[in-house]
Amino acid sequence: MKTIFLHGLGQTARDWQAVVNQASLSDTCCPELFSLSEGDITYSHILTGLEKQCENMTEPFCICGLSLGALLALDYTIRHGDKVASLILIGVQYKVPSLVIDLQNLIFRCMPKKAFENMGMSKHDTIRLCHSMRSLDFSSGLNKIVCPVTIICGEKDGANLKASKQLKELLTNSELHIVPEAGHEINQCAPESIASILNHKKHQAGSPEN
Image (tube, rainbow, N blue to C red; front, side, top):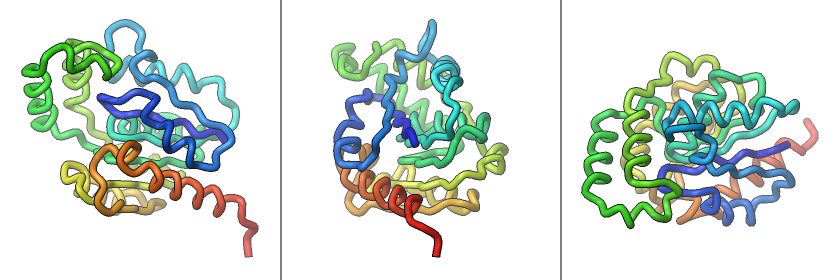
């Protein structure tokens, strides 16, 4: 089964490499999310690009997303649940706090353009993308998600720990893993933890029923 990895804001597809190297997965895909957007880089344009990339896949697949990638994974599964076999959400929000987005954009505005060179897009595009996410709220669509969901959050990811615990209660077919000592970007600071969970779930899926 194919596993699609969706990176976060401020990351690129390369940030999944350590996870992919340690996970026993035979078929993986790590798209550059900002390259999926046709025209201006906005949340809706990235989602449309993801939908186009996945539209010809005939077999159900797994989506593993972090932060922005987790939002896209949630949104895509609500819209196309029949195509998603399982979902892994890392550092996730299901209702984006607009005040946090506004604060983040304020910080971005104060940063020099050079600081955005490794983010895969410009300062202007980053601010526009964040603004396009400030009203996202998937609360009403969570009941459409019926596939197994694994929620992962770093112990030190204070901005997303509460939402991760809430999401565990809202999704009936879900489990929560809190990674000790880890922050938000777990694919960078603790890739072995994600790989271990992926490998365990693959082993479970391949085990014969008792």
